[in-house]
Length: 251
Image (cartoon, rainbow, N blue to C red; front, side, top):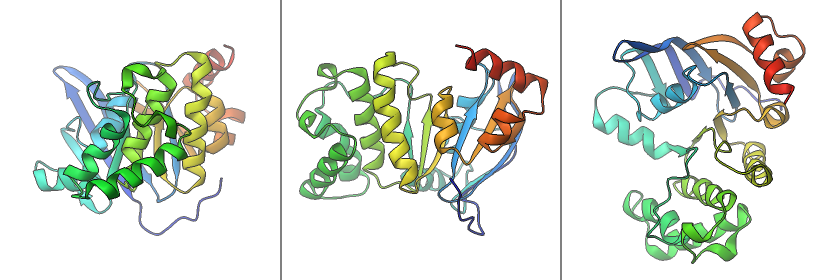
């Protein structure tokens, strides 16, 4: 996919560091993401991938460096954090749906409470999104009545209901049974093709090859290598990248 690069990046990370106690989880991450780009972040577990994308909407706090999202710098100012969270949808490995609420209630909760939409508008939007992710008939069920793949598609619809400018995905298929992975990836491919700016932490290399504009290989809290999918697959420069790719592509 070729992206018309607009002048201003929508996400800027400059020399971002994060510690958990003595553990240096992020060691100087710098990245610029332009509107409508799809960025795939991959690497071994514990390499800082999830920590990094969680710093973008302040689910984790970075201790050094700068993160600017849509022109707003992430600081301790709660107003900045709230403004960024309004524009940033997040989909987690575990679906994080409210089990006591129906699918419809899960999706309409934030638009009604945060965007101040009336119930009719929120429900119309929710139905439109449930159709988009292929499960409109599940609107009145509870999460526990759905398969994992269906729950993850509800989670994507819930994030999209806030009409975010950016979608963050933290290993969205890793908790799913193999036969459900494709139904979630299909929704993500459609989203990418519609022009959504996306940062995706994933091991799904077919997805990365199909839709990523750029890929970043993380290891030990650093970006070891980045490039287009073609660069990364066909001509990786770093030994660590080559080793990791050989391990995951041989499965």
